[in-house]
Length: 497
Image (cartoon, rainbow, N blue to C red):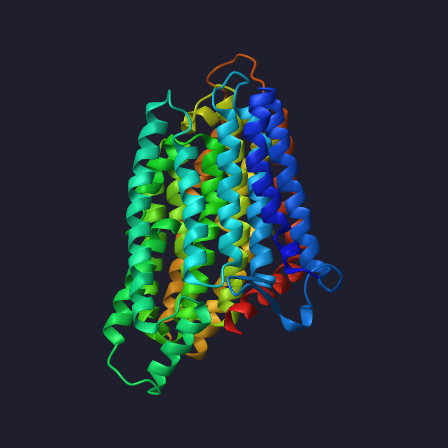
């Protein structure tokens, strides 16, 4: 079958990106933008799943593990798993956006174009097979996100957040591109396999020359640039302001899908490409992970704005995921992939509830959640499930993903470098610390009366999406955790192949 068929999910998004402006000119109907976006994302999701589970009939021979297209793109278990995460996250954001924004909100056509463009960049990143393609994918998603963050021009916070995000994003992109250019100058290749082959030969002494310092410097620039994308310490300063200032559906996309995209790039670059020199970075990643989880949780304790609190929580969660990098075993990476996936649904679900509270006119401070259970049991339950899952309490999905992550890293520590065990202990202690500020939100929702006794109406789309989040985190993932881990194992196997 023609390999172009494998591009159908991306091509559908491109077609919708072109169609929405035409719909705007023809009808001017805000409902039609949302419908077009929802349909294109849903169909793309179905095609990704179809290509993944029925490879013999539709796309590629599963026995060959992966399918490379024009040497620039690869379709395998790793790429398909994350494409599903990206598309589900984007579909949820698109679905709630029609209720979040008022019908007379200007520039809604542009909003959905940027949303689809950002998602397209994520799909390209998931399938990228060389440095230039992954850079293009990241930048397409990032440039679209800058516009999404600054979407509400009448809001000073949104404009300020967009400007900060643009400046920090441009700086991180420059670092990444400079690191890639140094690697290309050294190796003469931009493909992951080509760079890995050169570095392996250099490490084994097959290739003569003292290039270790140049490899270290280029790796430093690339990892620092990607560190900004996932918002780990010390590259985290932008996250609280952007999460607070952006429209809440956009924040949900950043916290769920964009952060996962950053980890996709980091996993591909560090494990699949820079693996011959990985030992030099284990301690660095360990320190960054420890500082990120600790500073993230400590800073979250004193936050009054729910967006800023969840932003610092995301920094801490990134620290948990990073402890897999010093371990560098398939079990640890499988756990990291599992927690990245579950985190996307936990944090995305939490921000969907925040969007519901904000769209009802209640505000975004912690006090806005007082008495939420008396106004909407469904939203309060969804928020409770998401927050307790972020802590990692059983039997929720967050417990399963954290257990897989910590156990995989612990095994690597017992079998090899024992200092890695300290990272697991730090992760457990920080998880216990995070319980304080999560319980504060839950206490406000259930033990306080609403500050305003007036009637409040929450958007139907947000209530339905919250119900799906509850079912996913409480029933589907915990009941099918073995299947979840099997998917993550297959995905990590592609990185170590």
